[in-house]
Image (tube, rainbow, N blue to C red):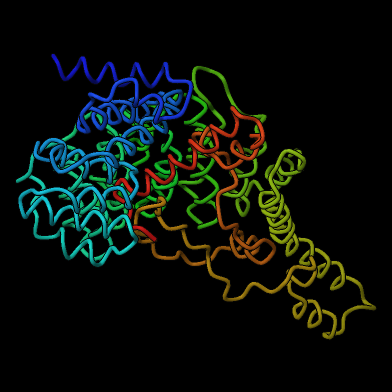
Length: 476
């Protein structure tokens, strides 16, 4: 009860303090480091659950905790809880200088000092040294409050070289700290790793658990990137029913955006069935509210059927698309789709012309048909040659902190994808909005750095990205 009261006092001071962190700290210098760190964790867990209003509180608590740890002496660290709090603070977005200086003043057991050295190496961008120091230490052998963070960091550091071990460590992190920012980060990384490993069952389970618990996390846009790339990479192993089950837990707008992104990637990669399914779901909407007026849905569904027998209908649909509502990269896709549609009907017109020429007595010589055969449909339509064009490879499943996922084997290039690539090189990033616009760069760009409130939000966003990098990301 006393701990809860102290934590409440820390958060209360945070909310009431209008001045500097040092001034707030001076109002109650009796708080122990572990109490401040626990308050920080509670705020971060609220953020993971979707409470974006807690972002400024997180930034303020980090500053207060940093000031307290800088002032801590050897006597403070006689309590093991305070030394563990120092390590957790470091792995929660803390200052590496503070961690290293405070650890040098502490007298504690050899294993805790080794963890401190590993954390400092990790924070200072030396992942190889951090792995060497931390690898022998079992997260399950230390207290749970430290073990969860240690498992998350180790799992992320080992993801590239030992993905199976990394997945086990991420499971341990979730086991030790359910319902927290640690679990959110572990689940998000598990989605990308499962796709890398080709483990469709684990990918689907981790995705389901993430959507159920953390869809409104400020990091959910990174999950969306991993999810879309994973669906493309594992398209042969994940059924459309399973995909629909996962997306049905999202709100209608997020579900639509996810399907639009899947439809686009699948169309470019030549996965016609998946593209048709995803674009149809995007158009249908939910609860009778369709999205047929969304030009992206019309474009992506047309891409998946551009070489079908209903080409005239496809060309008509493409002609109804408002180019002004598309991104630059999607306008290039539209141009490519229209060119391919023209290519599909071009041979029919050429054949009809040949029949007319054959019927005329004055045009019965063999030179004319030979010339007609030599002129390819691509030449007739002014399209560049597409022989040997390769399908666009799926973008790697790479949240800011996860290794690239294995891409699906490239499918033989279809006429549609070849022309799309010949006319429009694949964009580096999906152009559709992120599942969580609040964390998108465009939203940050709209803030005025000269306005005090906007400046605080910009700082909070930068700190959020740094904290996510530290929550299990191998420093770059």
